Structures are given as structure tokens and as C-alpha cells.
Image 1 (cartoon, rainbow, N blue to C red):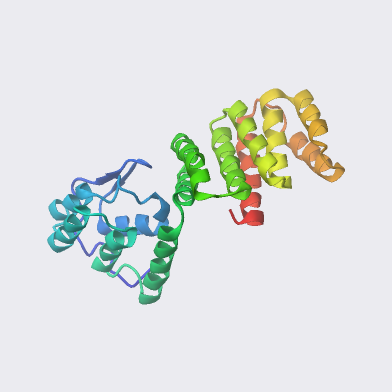
Image 2: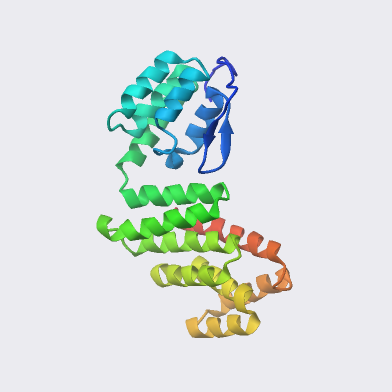
Length: 256
């Protein structure tokens, strides 16, 4: 980040609590770091009058607090709120600040369902799977209004399936991965679906699902090898590892 001095502003005695990921913030430096790393999670549950009052009462940043209090009295953009916070301690270099401005502008210009999906993805990265599923569900409810097609819908189903799988709710994970494959028809979503079927119902169900979907020989050999390597179904850590690996491959291949 920029050439700021760590903890140039006093630490708060009472932290600012970010409910969405269960995080306590004690300094403006910590908040600036959170802002830069979690743009999709910045909404009215964080950027609000309570935060402005926290700046005033806990950090004694009265001018910044007054500016933010004026903003929350009207409709404001993400950039209008967070950029003054970052400027307060010169948290970023000039180049980093301009780059962040572009990211914020790009996020603000996205349709609401896209912003929601990014929020869900961020929640998954923080292992807040139940909240992520709620956000993905809301995303699908708004998708048609924004005229977003199969590629977007499939990516939401895929990521929701990963969230369900991390909760070991395999029936829901299977449904999501199946929908994702129906929309995307990619090898990554096929593998995720078949693996989820195996973890939910065992080898016989996995064999049948592969036959029903006409899995190609190369994918079948790879799937059989990977499933054989993870051992018994009852070992949950292997599910987490395999799905994490396939999720990373999915994102690398699709950019979603």
C-alpha cells in the first residue's frame, strides 16, 4: 500500500463491528485495509451513520466524521464514502489510489445482480457460506430484470453449489452443480456435479450419473482416478480439497 505510517491515528477502545464477516475493526488503518480488500462487501450495513459516529467518538476524526454524516443524509455512491476515508491517512500511493478509483467506478457501473454475485463470492472467500447462499439466491431473483444470460446464471449456480458443499449439504450442492452444468456445459461443472453425486450417494449413483450425462472417456478416467485417491466417502476433508481445487480451475478457465 501507500507510504502511510502505521497507527498514525489512535486505536479505538470500542471496535467497529462488521457483522457480515464477524470482524472487529480497531483503527482506520485496519478499516482502510478491509475496504481495499472487500469492495463488493461495502454496503449500507457498513457505510452508515454508525461508522461516521465511530470515527468521531472513537478515533476523534471529527472533520471526516462530519463529512460522512452529511453523506448519509442523502443518497451517496460507494466512491463518495470510501475515498475520503482512504485519503484521511494517505493509505494508498497516487497510483494505487487511481487504480482503486477505477475499480470502484467499474463496480458501481455493474448491474445489481452482478454486484450481488461478487458480494456472494466475497462472502465465500471469508467462509460465510450461509450468507453467501442467501446473496446468490437474491442474485438469481434479479437476474432476468438485468437481462443476464446463461453464462451468468451458470456461474451463480456453480458458486452456490460450492457454498452448499462446504456446508456438507450435498443434496443442495448436487442440484446447484447440475443446474450449472445445464447452463454452461463445461468440464469443470460436470466434474463438480459428478463428485458431489459421489459424495452424496456413493459409487453406484456416480456411475449412473456419468452414464446419463454421457461423460467422455478422458473425463471419466480422470474422475475415477481422483475419486479413488480421496478414499471413503465419509472423510469430509477430501470434499473440501477437491471442490476447492475444481473451483479455482473453474475461475481460471472462465474468469467468473
